[in-house]
Image (tube, rainbow, N blue to C red; front, side, top):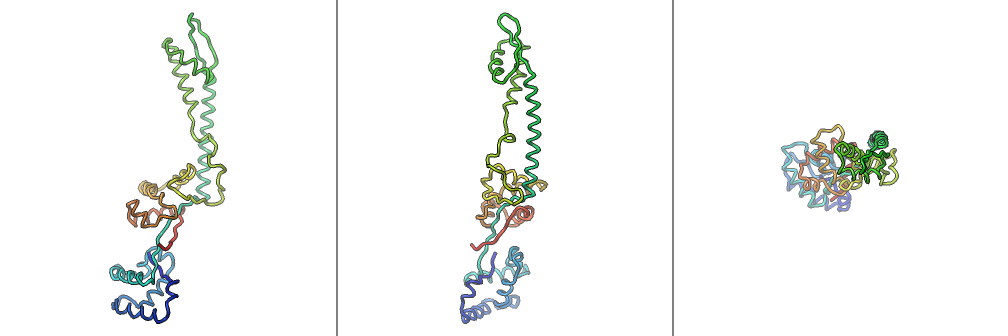
Length: 273
């Protein structure tokens, strides 16, 4: 991707520019190729969107002339009339996305809390029968600490007593199971939902950022989602489009497809190599 190296062009004295114009006419005596000043004017007045699509879309506009214009581009690059630009990409979580993820998170927490509350009531109501040596039963309320100690002694008791022990242990194990829904936010205070947040390094995303990345793919085709998951690690604003294509082993068309489907969450910009 190329654009006019205006800063360098303005440094040339007039006689140097005139010499380049004559050299260009000599090297490219084709009627289909306009004079050098016309090409430079077309590049300088082209919109960024046109140049983002491709240099050839702004200047050539004909597949039949691509081969010839490749030589033109090389000629201009060697004389510092053009500068090569590389595409870089960053990922941003929009306020709308962050709110949606937060709402779903709070709903999941509330559901988890209700499950735990019901589980706690079940545990408090369970009682264990301990068969003593003389054969008389003793009842006691089940607490997690007591249950762990007492249930070990049930392994040599009757089959009916063993069945109760299995029930008790299953309740204890489930009650001790933890996940991050009930834990405090390890990243500190939540980001302001009113502003977008840049995901600086998607390849090392935090748990919260991974939830954002996952939410970005909701409703999209599986093959697009898989490709986004493959290459979003390179959307750190440092990797160029050529590096992404090489390291992810994808085509430029496949990269464009991802950029199109996720454009709401992506910032693209061109930078000289």
